[in-house]
Image 1 (cartoon, helix red, strand yellow):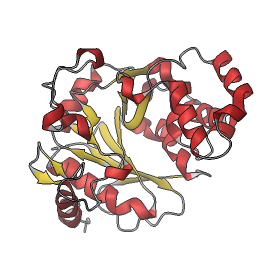
Image 2 (cartoon, one colour; image 1 turned 45 degrees about the horizontal axis):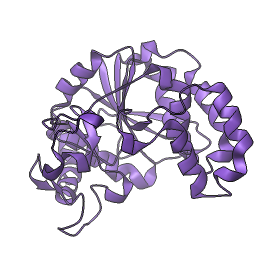
Image 3 (cartoon, rainbow, N blue to C red; image 1 turned 180 degrees about the vertical axis):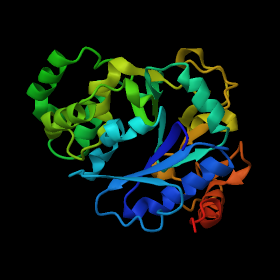
Length: 289
């Protein structure tokens, strides 16, 4: 057992994506640590078992809030946790990246927090509020209540696609606090996305990964590798982790001229790399005899 673990969250329909990403972490990311699949209690994980992959079944009532369980005592068996969304491609050495992020502990190290285009913490809540239901204008009292409780609503938002932390530094009750706050403001987060709540509860503890570690895929395309001081980009970053976001996910078939078709660091078509890694799952993670 390693002292570091990569946690990937998946339900039944996303298990193949988790498998491909695990192989990607081993092959292209050279990961030497452990893996843990975080899932719901009724997910069929039989094809994951017996391969050296830990499985945590959370008794989550609502799947969209499952990510809060990475802060549960279950993960105290490891010293360092790197959580990754399934719609990620690893294109560099994860061991080096984890060692670099460890210098920021005891912070919770997250993607984002530095990009104006990502918007503010409040803007993130307003975005999800407007997706369904009556929207922001109908919830003036709720936002007034939120502003009275949290100082940082106008700060730049962190995204929850990649998260690194030391479990022993997470106060007991953090997971329950996240659940409670999600319930408190459920009215303005109708699709129950975990990111707005995490930014409310954990913001004081968060620190940015920076683009040397992680960024959205578009910023690492050759045309966008330019210095941009007002966004904190030097232009010469070589991020280890690329987040592709659901509409650009590596498993999707795309036209050659479409965004997220090609990974330039690995010199591979994203979909082809995804399929190749998925096909190698049994080889990279053989069942124990």
